[in-house]
Image (cartoon, rainbow, N blue to C red; front, side):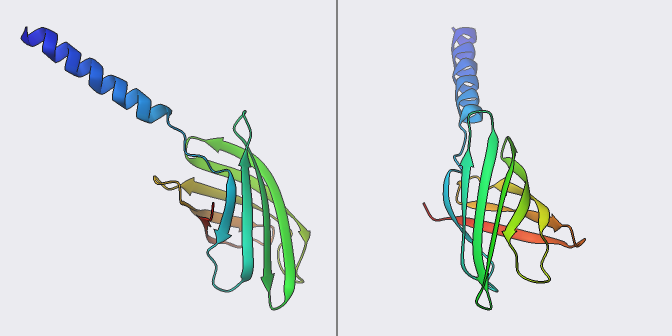
Amino acid sequence: MKIKNSLLLLFALLSIQIGFAQHKISIDGVWKDDNAAVSNAVAIFSEQDNNQVVFAHYLEWNDQKFIENGIGIRDGNTITYTVKVTTPIEGWATEGIHTLVISSDGKRLEGTYSDNKNRSGAITFIKVN
């Protein structure tokens, strides 16, 4: 009887683990850029069936508009995408790469950016809806 109960418990625990491992946090939606130096900063993320990620980003800095978009891939809870600026701000980069990790509650994307001006740093987005 002890072996049967132990096997049932083991099976139940494995089933729960597999269920959690298969739960994928959605990144689809509107996100706020968590950079206090800019205003009206929002991003939209959309994930396709093949783990492809589409990104659009709008912000304003000193009354200047900045728009970039990108395409990349999701691997587990990490997304990496290449961005191209379509409405630049003079002196700012025009291309780059973002690598972000999704928080366990799905409400934050945090990571790094690097750009074609050899700069890099932290970047964070907070889910709006």
